[in-house]
Image 1 (spheres, rainbow, N blue to C red):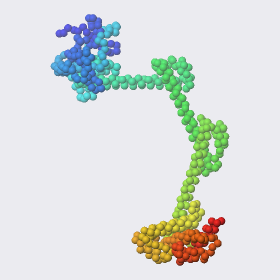
Image 2 (tube, helix red, strand yellow):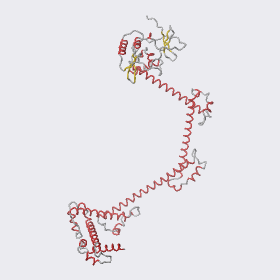
Image 3 (cartoon, rainbow, N blue to C red):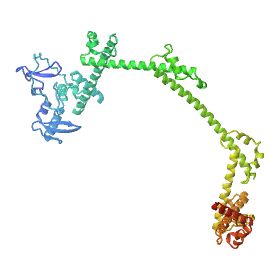
Image 4 (spheres, rainbow, N blue to C red):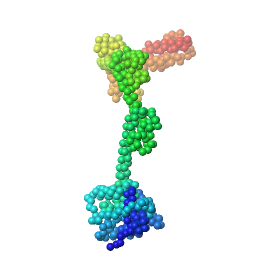
Length: 539
């Protein structure tokens, strides 16, 4: 049997384990090498340590401080040795610890004075090793490992190195198979504990805050404008005040609650004002309808009735509030009236448009049967339409009158005749066809009907009008040509007092005069126009 060790394990007041030497009275936070298991001794003997940086492992030499990303041969030998130790059958009561991966931070000092007085050593009870603990899932293993951390009193402030030394001899340490799993489970546990403690603290602070605010509510002297120094003597003996350890926190809660009360008062004032505005608006709506818009009193009367009379005044409303509501009411009433007027206007416009369209259909019918031509006068068709409902329906409407629409149609017909004339004229010019004063209507019709593709573009019922339009143009051109010839006479020049018979003899043989040989009336008309122009020039 091995002699008992002089080193004993005990726990400090914060739960952390430490060891003391019963012979020398030396104490240390680090487990003495004499108590190392075979696996711990192998780890301590290897100068290389494994670290983790952003998920990537690297290795550092304890003495030379050399670092490398590649696993050193000495560390590989350590892994093989640890593997052999773990696989070696054992009948001892101490389970074999697995390799711990220390943090990058340096370890605590090896030996520190123990707190005085040193408590009596307690026997170390190590759970007998009855083999590995069986678990059904990774989650169950992780929960069992977390329970181990709780049982050992480990908190979120512990480092993994210190926690590992505390739990490595417990069989539950091995329910997670690898050191990385244990290390991650430790950090998850620390995060959970930190979150739990934070939530407990926040809940406690919320309870203290609510109790302190309730104390302020129960203090009659407390007002939104009270100073902390004034109210402080009234609160010091109450438990809700004493539960808050920091006077700075009490002052902060005091000011926060003051701001909350001010906000509530403002909201209450706004609600009261809104309610008053709504009731005042309803009173105006009930008293004056859209039909009474002309009878709505002006602001001066409203002010006397509602603002100056204390019995009619609403809570929290000032004269500006009354004026705003009155202006909104008045604007809405006039908008409604304008909307009704616009609706009636649109209906009237629709009625007028239908009446115009009906009368236009009547004119189109008359044009189609030939009752309306470009030479038709209003007096010619009035007896025909005066009793027609479409004519009667247009009377009294706004916009174009019946006679306006009639002349619009005549203008459209003249434009249509002119456009057809242009079409025929272009064709004649392109194909060498000649139209002169001697061209008869029958000859013109024959020229049009025989022209390839031209007849389809012409409305043949207008052919006579087109012919007359052609003839009028030719007459204008020839008359203008003769007029220029008269102006061109010299030795002597034509005078305003000259007679046509005398001038006619001087024009014999000129093209303008010859072109109108068959129309003496047009020849004399051209002379009269020239004389009139000369008379105007001399005067």
